[in-house]
Length: 638
Image (cartoon, rainbow, N blue to C red; front, side):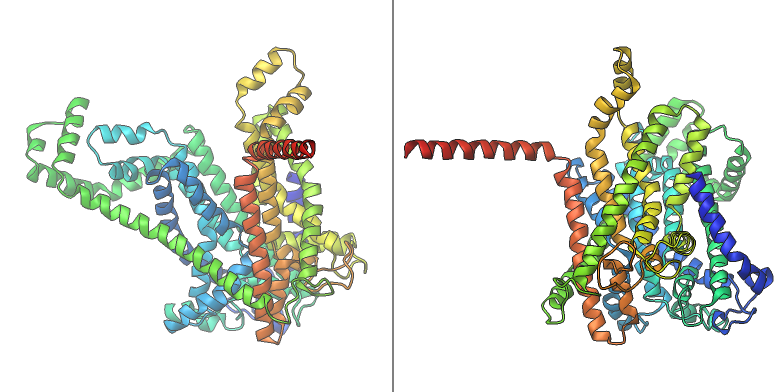
């Protein structure tokens, strides 16, 4: 994994050397203008499009973080355990929808709502709202995992002392899960910074950065300034693209990669601090605590004075022993007349947050289904046609890439996870490999696409036309690099969950390590591995940027691994360059419906078929036996 990570960095850095030389580091990092289309070595500031990235990311997190945390609290504490699976499926559905479908929905349906308020559908505010729902599943998943890892005594003890359940959740339980929540927010931030294809369907301006950024907040929010990832993707094969321009884009990609690595190091530091309180940077925690205590000094003094004046029991005790503190807390809570107001206030926002998630997902799915069915019914529909540049052929190309990428990545991910879990004893080695896996997993997919373009096509020439062109095999191999990190980590987590007692007992009985793995560990983990494989298929299905750069936006007349080919997601993106707007919109919706049905099908298989496959097989076996006996009796009676 380290070799892959450094290989990607090395190739991107190598291709960016010409850009740094021609445009100069000063123009890239210290310029205040941007005009990439003039071909001159001026006006190529990285920070201007990156400022648009930061703004869209900040607004999206401003929306997604409170909604995600409140939704997670509602799922964890307000509903019965047997119903939590439904809400997790809703979150997984949002996570599994390809970004180009979000872009299609935001540019048309959500855009109409924006127009009602006098805001263009092609604006930063519209893009930020869309992006908030794209990162929402990450925040919900990480917050839920963090809440579930907290000791339940941190909830029951405050309640025993007289606190309400809601106050115990927010004042004690959630604070204990703070590190995990922060990690989720940072990961969501990295996801938002790296998003490309959905934003490229909304943000389309890159020539007026300086003017717009000086026009005030309203002017910026209503503008359609491109983010840095959109600048990279749209100019890679633009009309003015040449060798120096593309090298500049690789330089932008390298700088973006550095920022993503910084986020990964932040996550590593926070998680390491959570697991090991005696870390080397203890002074950071001390400094943070000092700043927090200093900031809260005056509010705490006011609160204590208020208690002393208006709560008589506070004046009768010095609060020196634990018993006095417990008794004071109980009496103070019992006399707190607004306790129910606090509970209902928090519960209200939890319900609103969950309702927003439900409403958005329902709106998106109904929009895709209604418009998709209309597009399917048109004479121009190509869902069941398999000639060049049809939806049917895009579906077959997608299946081919899924088969090739899973065939390569599954054994690699499985063997890597087995080695890390069952064989590796070096803690530093495991930490390093996991860091590389997490770093690759959070790397923007556009950077994988850039690497695939350089390595598989321009270096190895894996196309029918040599080093110039596109191919499905280059796209599939690039997708392998995209899914291996999360694939490996997911299988690793499944293997770790198998109790160590099973391993110890088996080895004590004389079982070899290989027999332990093949006869006990893998059969115990098979359900989880199959579910993870299905989720990885969903990841392949949703990718666009790597395939756009390696497999191309058009299909060849015949399906072949060494030729270009549209997938379902790249077929949607390709319609942005179609001059027939009505026809292109219908094509996007018909492809979106096909993709949505595949995503929902994968989620259904992963959550219902795979976990219950033994019951299903037994049921079918019983029915087959019954049918056999019934037919035999009928024949005998005749």
